[in-house]
Image 1: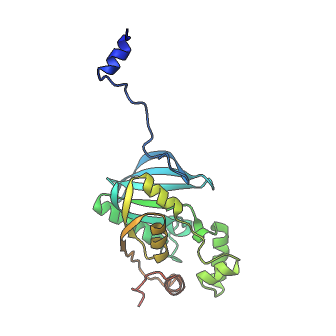
Image 2 (image 1 turned 90 degrees about the vertical axis):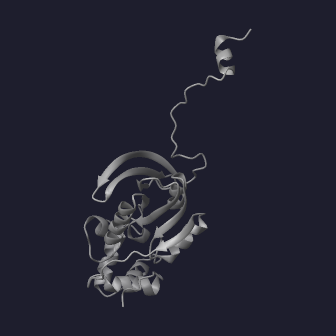
Image 3 (image 1 turned 120 degrees about the vertical axis):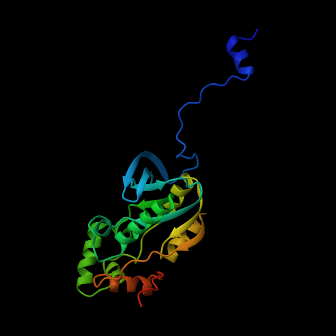
Length: 224
């Protein structure tokens, strides 16, 4: 004879689902989801989602606004303490980040993936050493190479997995960097469109921007 519980189950009753973490897919190989919270900004309210890169322990952030599953406006931004936090005029990183947050705010949806790879991957201490070399006449690429590094050591595979974790299938990518576009494509992200990120040219960053255009292939056609 069937027990009352089995009879209820066979009659279609269901057990209440347990807690689940929809942000952590079974197939996630590179990152794991840690935590999230609402973060109100001047550009609107975002949800900050924190991920840890398993191989390095680095903690990357996705600033998410609105519905982003499917197609989304996206910026993949590498950490720049001097520009993002302190407003350094040596680079265009801070203005690029603010542009991305503003555009997402205007649209009402989108993602900024913030990767912890300071100084194009060489770290803050070496970045400051590179700044000293730039003040002595080297450009940003030459300074990195003088210190024994490649021009750009950044990787974007973690960003691709974070986007997949969020359900983003295709992106309108806010970037001037063709390598970033190609790398994300190589990681399976469909790039629908490249959205140029314009910033003001300053006496302090004009040479830097020119070097990025000439030596790194960035699309910065407003330099003149």
